[in-house]
Amino acid sequence: MAERPYVDTKKCTGCGTCASVCPANVFEMVKGKSAVKRPNDCVQCRACERSCPVNAIVVK
Image (cartoon, rainbow, N blue to C red):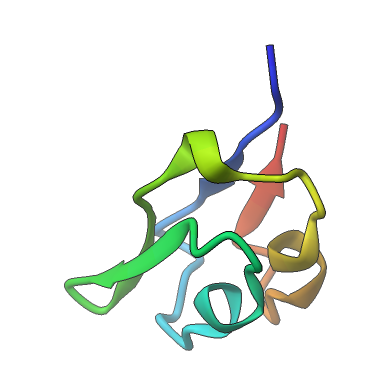
C-alpha cells in the first residue's frame, strides 16, 4: 500500500505551504485548513512533510 499524507487539523494553521510545495496538487485549503483531496496522486516526495512549519503533516 502506498504511503499518503495525513494532516493534523489541530496543528494546521492554514498557511498553505503544503499546497504550494506539492508537485502533485494533493492538497486543497478547506475552511482555513489544509485537506488531502487527492491522496492517490501523492508521489511520496515528502515535500509537504518537510515544509510544514508546525509539523502538522506526516506521510505514512
